[in-house]
Image (tube, rainbow, N blue to C red; front, top):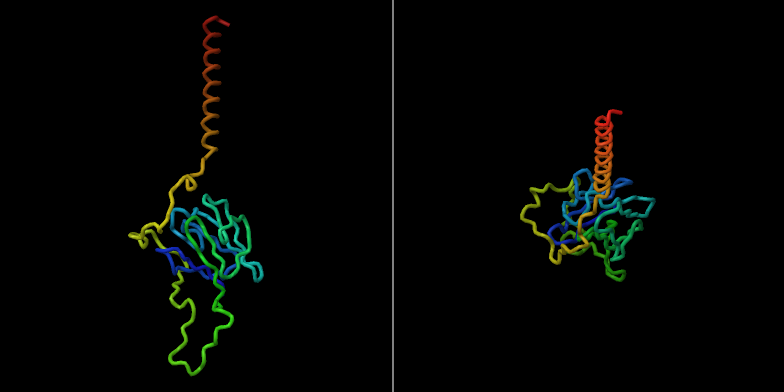
Length: 185
């Protein structure tokens, strides 16, 4: 089963198995894979399973979605590639060992059980709460420069411009009505 594993220090080891056709990833709790980190948008991206392909689709996130350092809007993520959401890096694992092709297979006479890759990975199906993250600082190299600035809300600006225009029209109508009353018409 394919899964996304977080590589970023402080959250490393957290993983999410991709066992449904559509998985949303983001900062808020209504995502299937919640990553409570400030550089991750509330609804950052979605993971779509299309046959054997794992497709990543950016959901107009603030800080972008990147595969191996290249910004994408929609692209196939292959096992071993790095997915970056804001400052969080993840890797797609397909459940198969990623050892070198010429590595010798484990023999039955080897002492003790063979350790499988990813045994130390902890799967958290619902994410973590903010109280569980207390004391976890930002990862090294976290940048709060202008590229992480808040998106502008243009609808609020247009609302106040509309309110101003309506107010001016009302004042003009009142002054016209008062001048008509004074002149007796």
